[in-house]
Length: 97
Image (cartoon, rainbow, N blue to C red):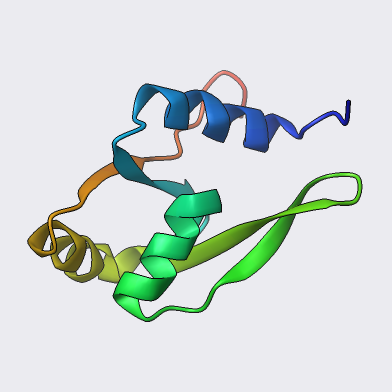
């Protein structure tokens, strides 16, 4: 069994809790979607479908949108009947000193 990255594991845990929604996962200046969510987002929003390595030799589909345009994209999906979930990045103040 190939070990997944901590980011991948965090995403999978969140997706498991929100299986009925397209999960948008904040990574820097983008909200990324993965796996089947990425395929749906790419098709429905006409955005580029790429891939991301998640473990040695394994890549998964990925599609992203800029954080500043998120409302427009999410409203388009909601208007089409999709459920969406947003996962924001947070930092631990103690961790950053």
